[in-house]
Length: 325
Ligand code: URA
Image (cartoon, rainbow, N blue to C red; front, side, top):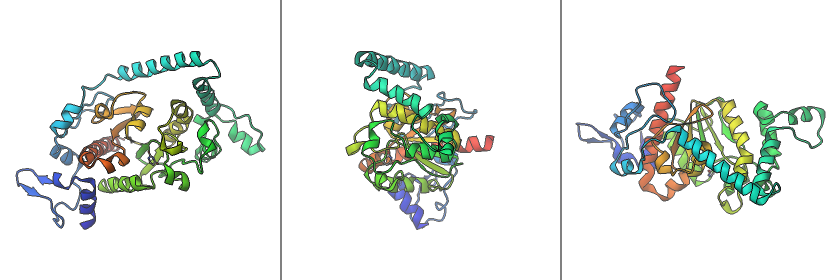
């Protein structure tokens, strides 16, 4: 199938399709290569070991698919490492907070979270007021969308054109989480609509998925940081309740964290993306697989095959979870 070949080519993984023993390389037009092989086969081709036991967050180690990757994979971190990291970040935050005083940025950030999770104080009509009075963890989709659309909890609201809530199947098995809207997303109000989005769509197609169909896409931040700068910690803190609620409403069987920033924010860690890849993490009880951001892959073609391994791992987790339920 020419389209699939084009997708594999785009992902830079076409050369991986060598049939073991037969020395046969998948070429455009080969009928045998038209259907994607099962995840287990693909992963075994790529030298990735699949867990045979039910998933335990953070205890599944995946063998690297090449030596370069093995070197990049640190031994699995015990879950308490993340907790320690989160704890030290909180300590650092507290230290910063006391240094800046209650009116400091971090202090404001936590006020922001309280406001996001608690009661809004602005005047509203009776039905709106009822919705506004709900804490974020209680909101349904409509109320959550409205809350995000009107959010003014951080400075990013001042320069946004649109909030970028998220898009897709609200009961999807697959949830993809990126960093923050860029210029195009801010204009259109939809995540991943630029070049990186096209690559993301191709990555999904390689898994025989497409956005909106059993896939939900969201970002950690719902508003564009000006000039595409990195999100600030207080912005993440204020915005996270929205993502957390999206995850609770979608109830995905797997989350794919796209890029370092999304991974670090979801997993509350400062660990490098190389050390986070190839293992199963957890966010709010949902398995999380970490992979490269599509925008990074556009610049680093060499890493596309690693992203493919990550997606295969995510697919294996998804299969395991959907068969188990
Ligand atoms: N990068 C992201 O992380 N998210 C988008 O929506 C677009 C680009």
